[in-house]
Length: 262
Image (tube, rainbow, N blue to C red; front, side, top):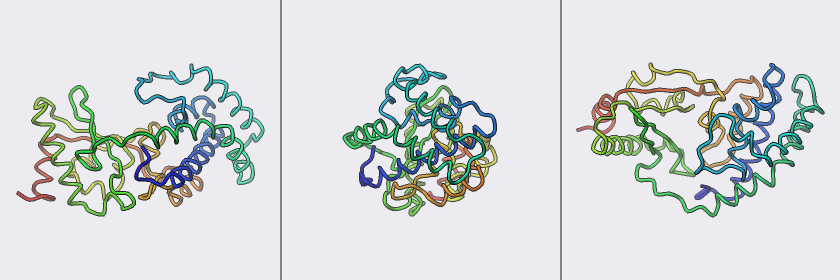
């Protein structure tokens, strides 16, 4: 979903984040990670191409079996073979441009599909959820563009509170709430949760899920150049991708006491 992001802004974001992901593949190869693993599991470029169907359930390595994607990977691999050794500014710049050129028709098609998608209703603002067996899985997306989603912490707290209350009414046997995201290392986000949430943090690996790459999109929906620069300079993600959880009732009580009042 692109709206309310400007289409050209989104194209610029995709351009820059794909170049960053291609750079990171080069970085990983230098440390012995296999090419297919780096592309599929660590940077997950497949998920932002027209090959990906969000309505399908993808098991381990399923996208590797897509014939058109496999051909594309072969072409990409040849580019990496042209620039062996440790990443340098010159070699990776050329690699990124050549890789982006190969990928762009499928990235652009995905962008156009997203642009035509009617935005889904978001009854809880930036928050959404999935019911999982034994727990509630939280998700977060900026619903306040071009403002920061954290410009109004009170509104975020109220949205989260309503989500939790509705969940308790709908499925009272669900006791836990979880979220896997880079946001679990982001101080403004952590103010919405009791200390037990942050104390439960379990790193999932900086690149093991789509939730790790959200830190490279800014409040306007464009590329977050400062965070991107940190990754290029250090090989480390600015915010660690992690899992946090707590009891739903604990979170409700915290929100009422500290954020909402009642």
